[in-house]
Length: 402
Image (cartoon, rainbow, N blue to C red; front, top):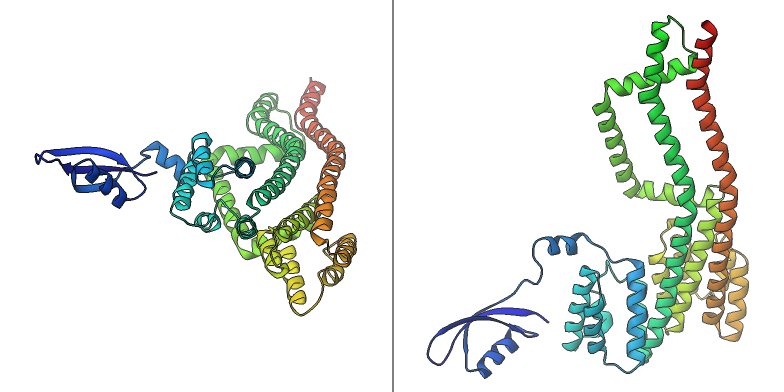
């Protein structure tokens, strides 16, 4: 609820300055009139200033935060708590400052009579189109609490998948970071000291060491320029990744890089089946549901495939037929969906497929981790060999001279 700073005069024409909480400026003026005051000026008091405003501007709302919000809201609504009161309760409990202000804004919209999905549409960076459409369907069917539970389950599934992928990537990234750091230390600080010893002994360094030292001399002589060039390269790489060509290249890499392509393909199938199941169970038409699923798919090739499937359904095909013709979708999906079409339980079949692929993502990541470990050991071996070749070998050769 907004807070207004006001100026008013009492019955003795005495100026009074203060604050009052009210939904609108008009209602605030009415409250002051009830107290025998005549308002002469009123402005909304800024709730956040300085550092708080900076946090709100630059912070984001995580998938985990949205998942917890959905679960808590569904519990309160199913318990019979009025939705406006539920949102006010969530405002007090939310620790994310940005999300707390958003919830407060939604609570005000609800009190003003606005539908929940309409209020969500004001925050597209927080509530994805799939989420808003599902809530709209839940409101229309009178099953908002059940729809929020399904949304929470789907968000939880997506969140767990992200955590698994991050966990699988943590080990190889750590090993690579250690190798790069070690190579940098050896190249920039250790080898120049060895070179000094060899120069004093009038001995020649091995070829590989001389090559690395040449690189070291260039980096040390142009340290600032090297950092600037690397920074510029990273900057332009990030810009390129945001272009259509960059996005297509990255999306293609996800589908062709060995080991990781299996993970990504199953993640996409988990998202496709789970999201479509949620939307269809909420009563959304198949065409609208496919549009929403395609919009939420973060791979260009899968997005285009889903839109092609939608166009064929629009022309009179069933869901299973165009999926069977598309090479990006495993044969099991159209086969299972065809059974769902025969029994009239497509959403249930899709939910079972989502659970299957969610489990498959976990198993594939575990398999990839067991494959990555020996590769990392090989990299460590190569790194140790590099150290031996560049440091130990020159020292050994020098000992032979004396």
